[in-house]
Image (cartoon, rainbow, N blue to C red; front, side, top):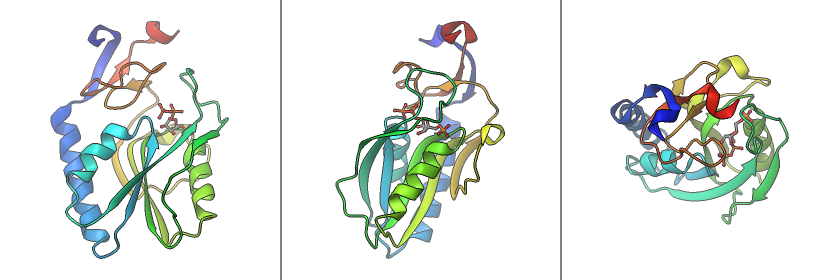
Length: 178
Ligand code: PRP
């Protein structure tokens, strides 16, 4: 797998540093609020697992599944819902945990969908943001890294379901997907 990566953007230590910062901020901001961290499958699974281990206040987790990419490398903007959270979101403090914001359309769709369930608040916790690719206004409350338009994989992010298990975030060689 490693031979398919052109550049390693962030290694284990760098990722862990940002995770620690975000976990501490969530612990501080949500004291006494029992937040629900809503992991957007599948990409955010590893990010969520690391974040929650640094959170020091009572909290809960749940999962939601949507898809916008299929096996494409550029966001199609076509979003489908696959799985709803099992938890009742009404009056809860929701933190959406996503691996990446590209066009921002998935996150916008998610926020609108969650809002219908009348939660107490909605915040966003994003590992990677691609500001140049945004097609909508997105407010990110907790962010790991801001990156350019490269196609990145690893640490939960895939290309055609592969590379999620890489322990770092790297740029996929163009020849792999072109
Ligand atoms: C990725 C990512 C976001 C979305 C971002 O999901 O997790 O949900 O694409 O793109 P956007 O900002 O352009 O909408 P993907 O469909 O690849 O599913 P996965 O997490 O299961 O890999």
